[in-house]
Length: 274
Image (cartoon, rainbow, N blue to C red; front, top):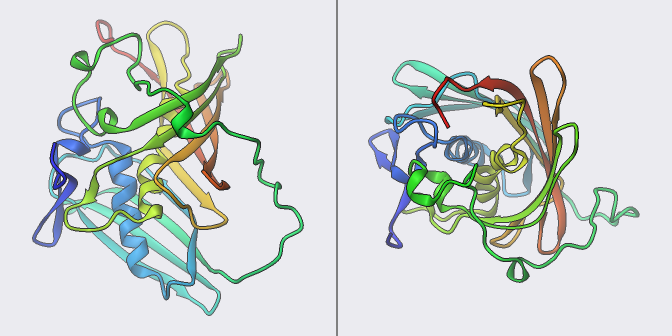
């Protein structure tokens, strides 16, 4: 790879996914991370001014997103002095494949009296934790389809599975490449691209040959993220009706800045698939 490698390249008024955008599920589909980055970029372009923070971004993943030229359509639903709301859709041609809503709030300096209200337990530094892979079931890199998931640097420091199948995982994550060709990766875009990995880290199962897929991502932040490493502390579980959820506390090296939540759906694997 070179420094010029990016997840998306410009193609007219669309963005063309590169091999860095691909999903492990199919060579014809892109990963949820690049989809999140594409939507977050559209929302950032709508911010009324730099003082606004994208406090909440909810992405509904109701269709697979193909590895074809993708177009975003974004609009401000409301632009107030302190609150702005936006909607974004991603299109494959004329077909809407993903839709999102965002809430933007004007920031101001304030002295808070509960600095640890969002958690904030001591974390190991990224440099003190060894690199690991996101490969499942003992597969090697050569056995995993290429794509976005192979280029995330992961430094996991917690990995627990309870008797009921629920999971608790902690890991530092970093994506060291460009997201959009010729454009700077802002801290918020970086977080939006990584948010979908809460499910990958939680990775709950439901008996032999079945797992859970995420159908949405909600990212909330209470301050701008900073730095190149993002920590996720994930708790994930499911009920007896084939529906689950995961929740991840997000931190950077200065402390907690937000959360990710996702809705999960049982995904029985076809016979013969690993």
